[in-house]
Length: 375
Ligand SMILES: C[S@@+](CC[C@H](N)C(=O)[O-])C[C@H]1O[C@@H](n2cnc3c(N)ncnc32)[C@H](O)[C@@H]1O
Figure (cartoon, protein in one colour):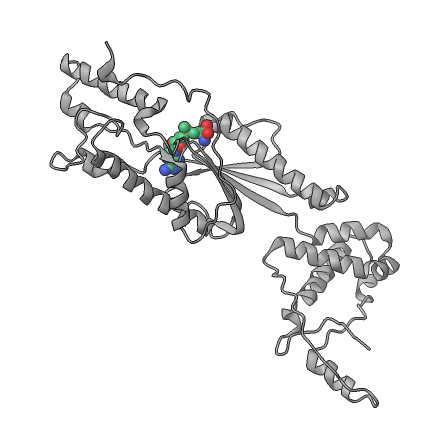
């Protein structure tokens, strides 16, 4: 004979058991419904579940008193849902419904059941963040795509049977506090199916509570450095970036100073996100990068910035702007490569790369001549 039954772990109070907590939630929901006049209070008072959950030792004690019976093997099977996790609460309430539906129907009638379980089963809320959202409209397109993908996932999980399984979405739009959040909020899609909130602050530090987000997205923002590397503004440093506004075609020390700053920023960014994501959460990053085989000076953006710097120097020579001003100005932008980013993510113990892909840039073949080669 094999007996499989729910038991309380030794030394646990019944009130600490998850199943008992679910029964208590159901009891409270029935009492509330009685107060609202949806069910008679007397009916609730007279209803008690004919269920007792013993401890493993209690079961063994009872069985050992039965003649002709010996216990060959007794084993604890762990069922560790955590009631602080909403998905587990929903799952547990779903199991209780499957088991108790008959007895509850008999006592309270079938019409009451849906309402009872709807009021006890918390609606799942998924929080999504877009970091460096700017004022729209790209952020709205990205968020819509993410929500549609997640909805599809939940629908396929519930095989289209239970629309109640589709979560509600809360979207956090983040950017610097100086971002024009008014424009962002005014242009929110009117027919959106999510709740929206703005979160001001730098993504190089913490923005959200611990383990609060299953999905974080950031597009075309992480290449902005937290600040210009100090060495490139220091006249006494070999990394002083005289006569340029970026590291394209600059001495290698300038590029190295930028790369070091980027590595530190990515480290801060990933450490903060690791704390904010739930276990198993997903971080989707899009950022402009230089192909592994090219240098920054071979790219469109690199040559454009170089050209801009050289125009400013021309203007300085004409006395339209001070040369010292141009020398001290540097753009806090860094264009990483596939290889470098992979290495930086690999250094962080909290993340693994699920997928990494190069997206095609239609301008990739247009390379401007170096300023020195212009006529
Ligand atoms: C080029 S826009 C990208 C906007 C949008 N994500 C998109 O894909 O079109 C870069 C945005 O990142 C923001 N950003 C840059 N550094 C940031 C930081 N440390 N924290 C938050 N936002 C930042 C900028 O303010 C800007 O709005």
